[in-house]
Length: 120
Image (tube, rainbow, N blue to C red; front, side, top):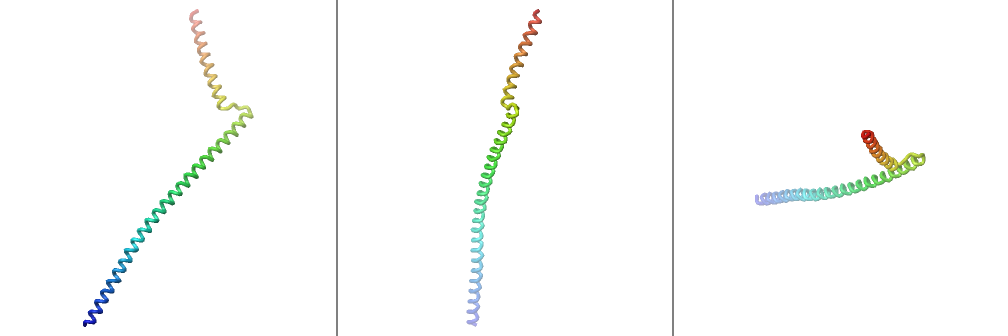
C-alpha cells in the first residue's frame, strides 16, 4: 500500500506538473500573441502613414502637373486667338474701362446740355 500511495503521489505530482506546464504554455502563448499583435498594430500604423504620405505626394504632383498643363493650354489658346485677331482679356477689360469713362463723360455732357436748354 505504501508503494501505491507513493505511485499515486508521483502521478499526482506529474499531473500537477503537466497542468502547470500547460498553463505556462497558455500564458506564454497569450503573452507572445499580445506582443505580436502590438507589433502588427505598429507596423500597420507605419504602413498606413507611409501610404498616406505617398498618396499625398502623388496627389500634389498630379495637381502641379494639372496646373502646368492648364497653363500650357491657356498659352496655346491665347496665342491662337491673338493670331486670328481676337482681343485678350486684358484688352477687353481696358476697353470696358474706356467705355465706362466715355459713358460718364457723355452723361455729364447730356446733363449740361439739358441744363443749358432749361436756362434758355
